[in-house]
Amino acid sequence: FNSAAVNGDQLVISYTEANTLDAAALPGNAGFTVSSSTGTAITVSSAVVHATAKTVTLTLSRAVTPAETVKVNYTKPESGAVVQDAAGNDAVSFSSQAVTNNTPAQADTRPPEFIDASVNGNQLELHYADANHLNANHSAPASAFALNSPGAAAINVSDVAITGKTVTLTLSRAVANGEKLTLSYTKPATGDNAIQDAAGNAAVDLHNQTVENFTPAPAPAPGPGPAPGPAPTPEHDPGASNADHDGVPDAQENQAIGPKGSAPGDGNNDGIQDSTQAAVASFNAKTSSGSGTSVTLVADSQGGKVPLGSTTRITSLEQKAAPAQTPKALETPIALTSFKATLETAGSTETFSLYVDPKIGANGYWLQDHSGTWVNLASSPYGGKMVDEGGRLRLDFTITDGGAFDADGQANGSITAPGAAAKMPLSIVGQAPDVAHGGFWL
View 1 (cartoon, rainbow, N blue to C red):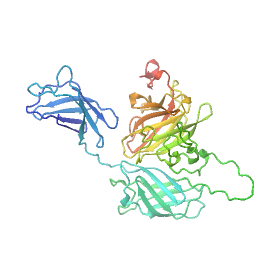
View 2: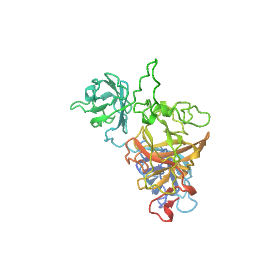
View 3: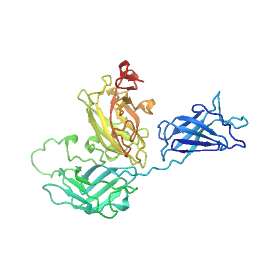
View 4: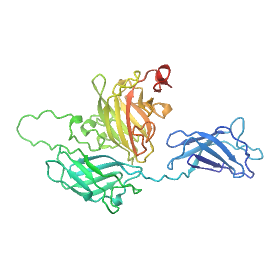
């Protein structure tokens, strides 16, 4: 063995040999296996020997992406044709050999996708999903934005700044708690100053886009007076603070219950309050019995913790009703935990962890693919697992942007997943519609 390189679905292994290689046909995968850093399986469809070039070309079951790290292994078959030189000397087995990735990067022609807009005081943020970061050197002028707040004082944009995939507007005045605000953006007719990604794809215009208002209510003035009425619950308070923009009010995240030894509000026991982390979100779900239970989602998870420097962010996490066509055998004690997350790289595979109370009886994280099949992603066949961490059940699972379990079906840097921490009896891995024997498959 000398070296290996891959381009798309063609992996070429080069050998150092004084003679040519034996050109005998190699059956099946010929003892070669390929692994990927993404965790998405790659199998070898065929192997072809090029005698004079002293190479073996493997055709893979899928194309390798430009950023993927790939390794190749060879285990000499015990019988049949093997890799050997013209003199009949067999090539030795090898494992975990690095493969040079020569797959060219595909041209990015997709414009940044608008996700949402939120305001807190005089800071308004527009969040985008894209394969690349936004271009901070060609931001749109302040005049490209128009704000409308019926019945309130006029408001306009005084400054525009871009960081990562977020556009931050500084407003001419602070927005009041409860104030209704809409935003419009019009790409300038001339010039190159517009919201765009690093590849130069310009974002589309926005028209009267609703802006979520996270400006907190002012503290009540001290003094005598009647006792205040009950405060609205966080999930029904339109002005509730949400500093990390994950769709869950800070007050609700601060009630999160984590593994043994964690402080209140630290649902994954990493020593950081969930309300301050964009990749961690916690909320209080309602069980089928009507009680409440704490649920925590971690994106870009490494054993339930977020790695330093991660730019993955959760943009929403909420409880939704299970669909009517949910299999009867699938018990959903907290219905669906539907979330949306934006990623650093479009088309990449992201790992998530969902912390729940083991008392709800869940034995997996169940999600429908695009054919309607329910699958337990927290199972070993799908690269997931279940972990007892300090009295909490941690469900680890992976989802590929644009893959079978991304509800939007597009490799756009954003994953949408309406899944369920649920229970299926008999350790069933999945249930497919219209299949014999009750519709179950293992």
